[in-house]
Length: 259
Image 1 (cartoon, one colour):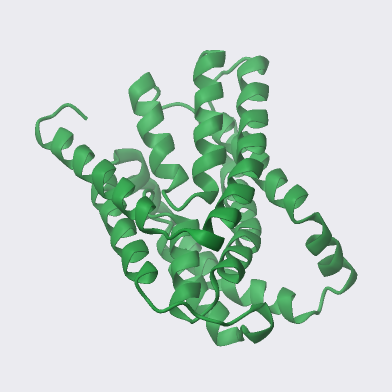
Image 2 (tube, rainbow, N blue to C red):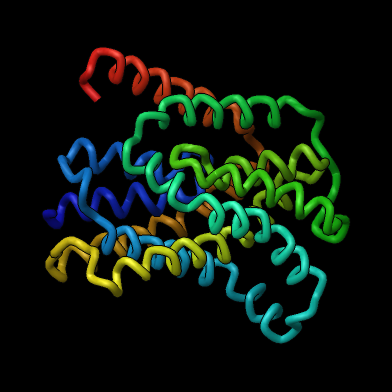
C-alpha cells in the first residue's frame, strides 16, 4: 500500500463515517479499485481510531460533562442506543464478516440506505430536542444502528433517519447520531484489535499508516461540522440520490463481471 493510497482511503473513511453514505461501503470500493481487497485491517483499525478522535475532539465539552456525570440521562440513552448493535454484532459477527469480504450485496445496501434517507426526509419536520428523547426512542434508533453492520448500510444515515422518524429536530438528530457513533466505532476497534494483536494483519510501513489515520481524523472532524450545518438548512435527499446512483452502478458492474 502506497502513501497516496492510504491518504485517499483515510479521506474516504473520515468523510463517509459521518456523512450518510456508508464508510465501510466506500472503503470496500476504494480497496477494490486499488487491488487491496485482502489487505488493510491494521490501517482500517487506525483510521477508525482517527474518526473516533474526531468525535471526541468535536464533542469534547459533552464528553467532559458525561465523565463528570456518568449516571446522567444522556449516558443512559447512549447505553440503551448501543445495546442492539452489540447484541447483533456478537451473535452474527461471522455472518457479517463474510458479507463484508465478498462485497456482493453492497450495491443493494446502498439502495436501501437511499430509500431510508428519502423516506425520513419526506416526513414532517419534528420538534423533539435532546431533552425530549426517551429510552424507547434511543432503543429504536439503536435498532437502526444495528442494521448498519451490513457493510454499505450507512450508520450515520440510519441513526439520523431513525431519530427523524421519532420526531426529533434535525440538529438534535445529528447530535445524538454522532455521539452514539462513539461507542459503535470503539466497539468496532475492539473487534478488529483481536485480529491485529494475533498477527492477522498485512505489512504496511509507518508512513502510510500515519497519513491514513491523520487524514481520517481531520476529514472526520470536517464531516461532522459540515453535516450539522447542512442539516440546519438542507435535506437528506441529495445523499439518497447519490447512494442510489452509486448502488445502481455497482449492481450493473457486477452483472457484467467488472466489479
